[in-house]
Image (cartoon, one colour):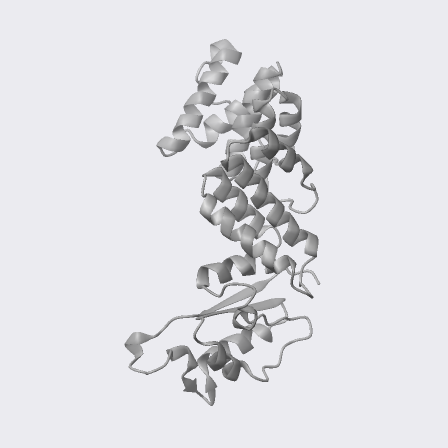
Length: 284
């Protein structure tokens, strides 16, 4: 079953200000606990494919009573994190990651890539551990290879974190291309590793898989593509890329403005009389 829409119902709070001696989400109102009504609304919605409650590790029995007999649409799956607490940790942060891995195709892989790019190895290790645990569960709502892809991507970033670029590139190149069409950060990492080994043509081809998006990742990818095009002697492609980045980030924050300045310098090298001018380029 393809999972397109997932609802994460966060119900892990303690409700200490409510004056109750138990979490307020379990207070009965209108004949049923509040958390039950929240779950029921999402579970009965025809557009919601999966409902994932995030609960406190001490509320397993209380939650089970609150959700008992809850009618779900045939296409829905109610995944109670507490039920599988022995296999997947139930802390709220892990539960959110769990929902990404299971429910939102490509989402967890994007989190892995973004975390890996900024060197957050703790987050990458956490996702790898969860992905390995989830891959062993029966009856997954997404193809098992999608979960395995997330784990393999995390492992590749951890290899890169150890500064073993040769092994890291080998792992990135072994990842299937068809399991995450929105994983631009990982394509960017792959391209940078290829460039570091002088494989510029392959790096350019990898970046072409990303395309230009109106997002920081897309603009950064275009900057890298322009740099590599210049190395390959493709002046027209380099000018297009530099012009796009210079125009997009001309008035950006200091971090982004530096890329715009570098792009204007690239235009100066390649264009002479157009030195420092951002040439408008339409990207689709």
